[in-house]
Length: 309
Image (cartoon, rainbow, N blue to C red; front, side):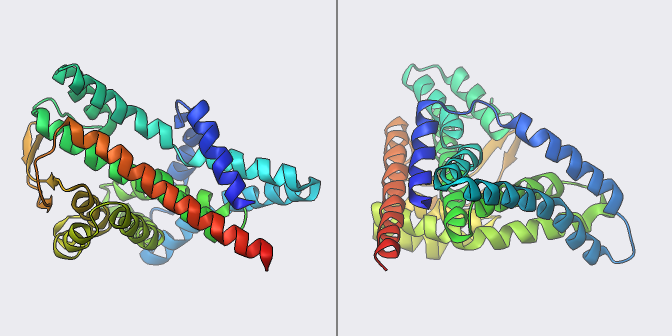
């Protein structure tokens, strides 16, 4: 049933992608803000951070499990529909891809200003000082990370935990890592620390599986070399694993210093081979789709084995 739900959700999103998930998270964001104010202090900083995270995550999971249990009681078709809806709301494959497609089309039309604007909206930072090559390079980086966060990691946790709990848990943990992880207030540093740690723990294995799949469907030798030799130089090691493997699999150079928000941002070089151009953006799309096909085949085989046994 998990495999059927996943295929159905992917087809549904390709047919009618959800334009904006912001409204879905607005209520949860207010809830997270309430918890931040309520549990931001206290003597046991570490304990309050764990408590706040659990109070934020457990009630939505229990609610989702209750809905799924009721759907199961009504019949397998209702349970399948519940899984499809949850995956449709949590994956965001096409939502992220629209930025990439807009940048790719703008570069083909030699409209660098439009490409910069689209990249700025995607990264939520000012990319107005980037040249053509840097715009394409950062678009590929964002595509690789987005495919991991919004596709592969969601699929992994959906398949790993019963019902829709895994997909919801991962996306809530990711949301809290961004929401509390960027909070500068020292009084709520314990919230930031645990939210980041919890998401890093959930992200550890899916990131390496995604990076390994990029290696399998791309240039395996270069991908493995870049993973081992370059990933640790990236500020976020887990993201470095995905980016280094993806760069090696594509045979391009990612990373490197850029000018963003009016300042030079120093970044290490990832990958081997040629500087990025528009043709490599098309290759990136192919790499991600091939990786997704591998995951679907593996899930299908697992489902068939489970059905036989």
